[in-house]
Image (cartoon, rainbow, N blue to C red; front, top):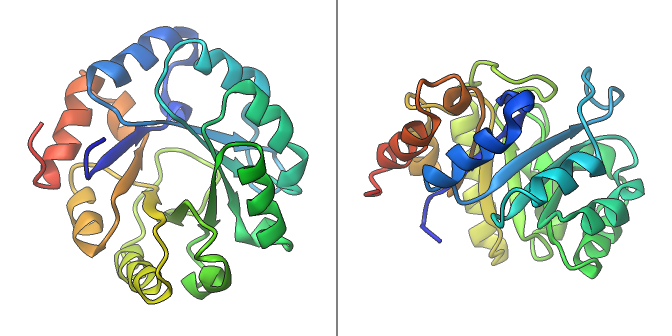
Length: 222
């Protein structure tokens, strides 16, 4: 796995041509596939559940990075693990028992991640930093694809990286929202190592080429 991880989000793909979208991700050297699960309650949109995860698992051996934008995320852990999720990331805003919930994800054999919304301080994860396999910084308000990157997310990524050093956390540091050729390099320089990109990849004429271009913007040869 490369030092820079690119995780295309299928939220922006043409779901009628899902096999082709996944194949393009593989052709471009994507490290993970990112799946956004929305319940219409925690965020103002509704997407998919375990069946979609199972379908994508049948199309690729790449790790499936499942982002739960839902209330009571623990209700989904078992079914998503059975469906083929490699990792599950839950919002601190929807997880009042964060330590317990993260450990349950790990018990199911999946990587456990926490997400913080733009308005949530990174300090919200300090106490569980040692438990985390992944920390996800949202650089847009979650719920919709194709949004514009929030500039102050760059400083927040830097503060998240500092927190991880202070706590000795070995978690990966992911950023999601408005990632494209113009924004990825500043996030990489601030300390992020894993990048979710949806609209930038799937609106491109050649999604596979776009994945490679994003990696190159971080100064990593393809």
